[in-house]
Amino acid sequence: MAQLHELGVAAAATAIRNGEVSAERLVQTFLDRSAAHVHLNAFVSIDADTSLEAARAVDRARSGGETLGPLAGVPLGMKDNIDIAGQECSAGTPGLAGHRPKKDAPVAAALRGAGAVFLGRTGMHELAFGITNNNAFSGAIRNPYDPLMIPGGSSGGAGASCAARLTPGGIGTDTGGSVRVPAALCGIASLRPSAGRWPAGRIVPISLTRDTPGPMARCVTDLELMDRVVIGSTGMLSARPLDGLRLGVPRGYFWEDLDCETERLCLEALTLLRVAGVTLVEADIAGLAALNAAASIIAFYEPGRDIAAYLEESGASARFADIVEKAASRDVQGIMRFISDPATMVPQALYREAMDVHRPRLIKAYRDHFAAHGIDALVFPTTPLPARPIGEDVDVELNGRRVPTFQTFIRNTDPGSVAGLPGINLPIGLTGRGLPVGLALDGLPGDDRALLSIAAAIEALFPALPAPKLDPANIQSGQR
Image 1 (spheres, one colour):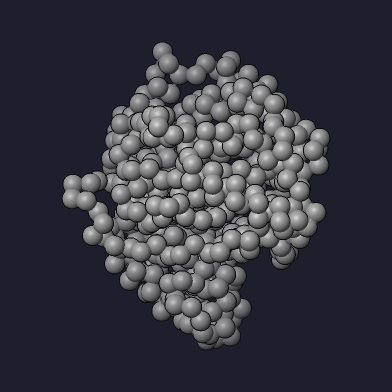
Image 2 (cartoon, rainbow, N blue to C red):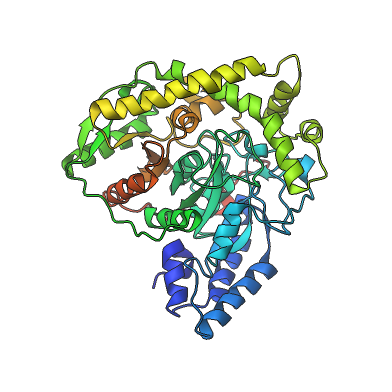
């Protein structure tokens, strides 16, 4: 058996079920490892006592001959915007400090019912409104492959903890790329489920139209297992044969203006796919950027409504005005003031046009594109560039130019998010500087299991990334 901290979700569950390792020993292994690498700041809190007691309960159940759930004893990191009964859920913002929900979010209840152990709360970009995870309230989260770099966000704590082997896997949330961007930058796999496939209740929201929780792990097998648990499926998944698979390659928009190392690795990936028998269909989705015009309108209109509803449902003492007033990170302060000020907030008429006209057109464009070209999925670089230094929150360097940080990193993941598509990130290699690069797959709404099957087959073409060398000494003094 591999070293315990190298076990993934499915392998850990099997080892516990077969009696190869006790759940308590496994959980303690990850607790010890997390304590040894606090420099990454991947967790905002760890509940060691509760985790160990839950693990001991699993061990007692196994010793007593009870049937174990599919995730029994497996420690997971849970993003700090997902309600877990009795645990603080701050969503990385001062306005929710001390908020302790009394009930699990439905996604947490499903995982707990399968025996998962919630090791701790993973850090995030404040209120999930960003991709750097440079959080002024809870501190910057560091990329395990280079602690001076961002891990991506907003689910950066889940991505960093999984990549660093502080957890076998975790649960993040995704509004415009927030489980796929950190997965790409940290070298792990992730799934954004189709809109509505995973329950989004009792999660601090941005936009209930766009938000979804989703799994993050080091392999597709683990994503599939967590997906199966949450949706209540019993069907097992097998890899789809690559010979005869048709993948769309939309060069326009998705493959434009890429970092040279990202482009090199992704083009090499296309060559591997072609050699494996995949038919690559090069065709663009006409007018995609214009069709995606609804993206920011929806994301800036719905928070005021949806966050207020969450606060009421979860029993929080804070109100939306408190969240706005106390926002700590400069970028999030600006967003929250913009969306709450009557002088700048999105008019309802514009929002209704986005929901009733622009978003349906975007969904139809994807469906028409798939049908016209007979493709099974789209393939493209998850992000146009690898991780960039912590602190570059406004703009980053790309091909000799300074470009907007947020818009650049989510460029490729945002349209599918607005359309409610399932999306997967697969790690495909490291740049010359040792930073991970991810390859994205998008399917049509509801085709999550088929997309996972495709991803499982494609994943086998690429060697596993080497584990990051975690060295706190690499952090420069004074770096947040």
